[in-house]
Length: 438
Image 1 (cartoon, rainbow, N blue to C red):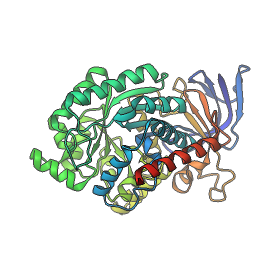
Image 2: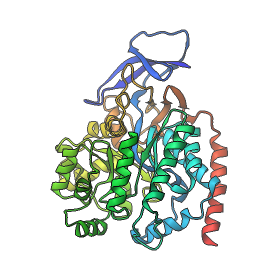
Image 3: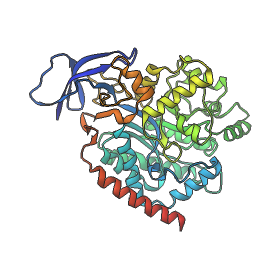
Image 4: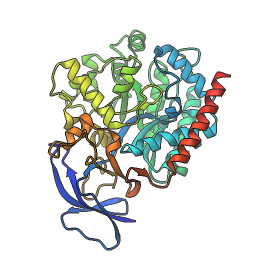
């Protein structure tokens, strides 16, 4: 179906200015942008007074953790990990499907049109089906480990891990409906050996997939890697192993030396800033301002709700921006324009898209409309874009398109009964809690 968006205020993400214009979507592409457009074969949406923005791109997610928002609050990371694995073990196929679906629908509701998911090996078909049913664009891989960080860490042999990555590729090719791409997503050092990291990178390169991993999330873990490899830390270890390059996403990237930041710049890898998780479970604060000043295209991720309690990219970006301003004592770092780029075009490039992350003729039609006209806290027409970042949230999102398909309209999900979804998910969360407590 074609859509004609009339009178939208198209946002320039470089200077945050807006220009009223029309946007014609034909199929899954943005066909035309200009004034006075018409198309008899298109459904017309009047977007007068609404901001038109690229859909947000969440570069590090664990969607099934939407069912674990709360049980792991306010505990140390070591205990957090053990409890997480214990809860995961109680999640059956139905729970995994609806937990993943819920996370995807939350993301769509708040304007995220593309995710980079690090899922679980236990229920690959259910996760892929949930992502496909939600209709969100995704890159999907599963976490693999072969070194025990604690008694609960799932341990795989290298052949077993590669078999799971192959299963991801096969399932995505069969069930992805054209919107899902596969990735290789080992959990990260030190829970991944150097041998497994190299094997996973070879597999990714052979199949043209991105490599998505955690990096430098915990100080003690990073120190352990540094001692084991006789290097500065995890990033330098990945460079020595031949893993770092432009097809690698590095979630968290907190405990890095200045030399390692230079290595990330040199090899072209993409750090993913996950500030809410980093604060809530006390991981630490990464040197994002330093990375940005070096021209490293940092991205943003909401991570999993077991740690971040958040699927709203606007809230995530604001938290990240404020953190960097606070720790550097420089209010100019990670400004609103930079934050918006981290949420959109940087994420698109990190995931290998050259036609996503901007509203531009010929690009994929992943875009959102934000309506700030009825919010008492957002009453400045001139500074709407920066106000959306600094004092708004995802509830301002009125309309969402993914691949030219309408997914949210008038702040309601299209094709889903939200009340029934909430009731079903609450019932399954009750079932999960009972199983964990038994």
